[in-house]
Image (cartoon, rainbow, N blue to C red; front, side, top):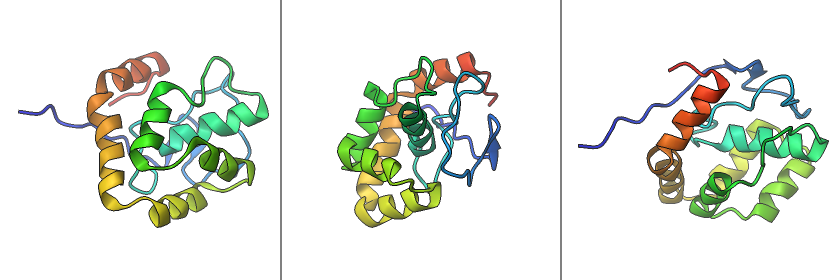
Length: 136
C-alpha cells in the first residue's frame, strides 16, 4: 500500500502570504514556501516561484532555483524553464502563474507533476521540511 501523501495548505507559510506581491523573498531571513504547499492545485509551484524570484533579485542564499526537483516538476508539467523564467521576469503574481499553468498544463500532466513531487520526491521534501522547521 502506498504511503499517504502529506500536503501543506496554509494561507501563511514561513512568513509569506499565499497571495504575496511579486517582490522577491530574502532567503537569508526566511526559507521559501514548503514544497508540499499547494498553489492552485500544484505542489512545488509556490516554492519554485519563491526560488526563482529570489534568484532574480540575488537574495537566494544557498538555494538553487532550478534544482533537479524543480526541473522534474517543470518537465512533468510540460512547462519549459525559459517560459517559467520569463513569467517571473514579467512580474507575474502567484495568481497569474496559476492561470498560466491552468491554461497550459492538462490535468493529467498536473497530476503527473504532483505525483513526481509528492510521491517520488517525498523523502527529499521530508529532509527540506526538517531543515527548514516545517511541521506536519
